[in-house]
Image 1 (tube, rainbow, N blue to C red):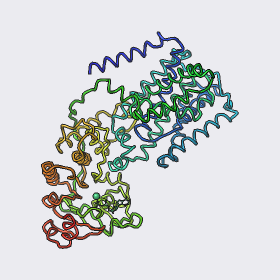
Image 2: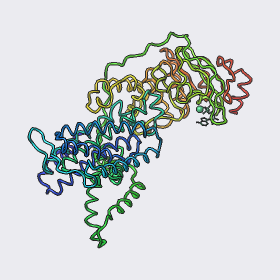
Image 3: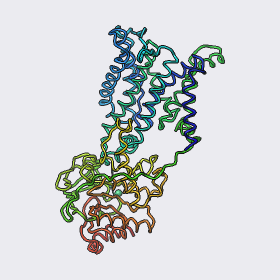
Image 4: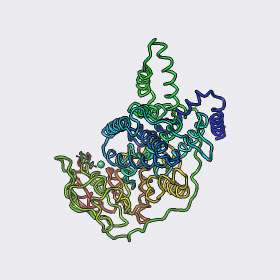
Length: 586
Ligand code: ADP
Ligand code: MG
């Protein structure tokens, strides 16, 4: 801990002293690094963490730079008014573009950002009002109380203060309720939705956030250089920003600074050195960058930051602080119908995976759903929880139709689930993963997270997560990365996550798979305890012994249809079930 503080103090001291001891040329270089790092930071959060790849960030830099340039030189606005206008205009453009392009999946989104970057470049270059390809010059410098940021040194302090503030805010964001949801966006969108996250809306928020960082950079650039021209905002610049984020390490916020420093310095250095080596002038550095990128993607996909992090001391995680308990949901009286499924049908192409399934579950009971592999149990489960849309039939939760609703809306009504194929964010800790489950029990958003005004609520969410982790017996793994646990244990983490939602109905898909005998006994005890507390459970399971001694009633499926329903003893004696399922195992 102490070593970390020493390193931090050292870095701060170096940053403060740098402009006084370095020659002007190097200060300018540091300014360029800071300006690029702002854009790269947006990409770290959006692309590295959130998985949304954009080649078009330079367009937002450009829109902001041109907005402030036009308003300050032609309309006589102050640079600060120009900043406000830039941010508003960029936010609006990002909302518009995001609303259209974020619906596109995979590489279509990236292609759309390229197209949009090209369009903006030509817009700047061709509008006579914006000075066409020669741009706009004579911008006023920004000033605070008569102090003008009109030299490289003075601009340095402005640029780096803004950068450090946004870095701290980004770290705060990623370590919060909305931050956990952002970290789940890339690979675990279905899980995030099942915890109540509106992932489409969240992607739009992240897109606008990254655009606003680009806008800050654009505004700072315009008033630092005192002129704007379209050349700085071409498609090449967009690719450079993405390179920086990847080189630095696209999943850690400081990677933005490392990446932009390495790329900016290397570019300067190579553009001086290479023409001498080759005896011609030319953009040789681009070729070198291309090769470097290939090497990096081959050997260090995580970028440089993970390598640097390994050299830095870890801050050990302390125990989770106590905090007032979160409010709890009212539970339905035992015995009242809680889940009513009827006529549920789902086809995948020509395959009818679930055919006219109907059953009901009463509050306070554990209902088992069993059947041979491929019988349609998981599909039924996904239809009930809203992760899949049914072709027909109805599902009622506490008397209310929930079929056709998105899983996040069903989660809001008190249904929580685990996944057969474990659905954890593997680089988040067990604690953070379980806290995802309590997403709907908090309400603080991105801005509160960045400013850390969410801490009281965050403490309650984490305390709740810690309680559930202790309850399922994983306290010793609280701060371990979820992906480092054995698969059986990861299933238990999924149960803890579901419990953190304070559900009325818990859906578990093969929770005992991969557990040892003793662990299965413990899980059995846990589920009995939950039932005793009034929780209702729908359990999909393969392990017959585990199910028979635990559940109140059973529904048996085979080839997508309901084969039988009844008490465990009845099911065990049912010849059709023995034939289809028990026989099938032998
Ligand atoms: P179970 O959980 O009982 O083992 P599933 O519900 O996973 O069975 O699968 C039922 C059937 O539906 C299987 O034949 C499976 O191959 C098929 N199936 C499941 N999900 C999909 C999907 N997304 N696309 C196509 N077929 C699927
Ligand atoms: Mg299954």
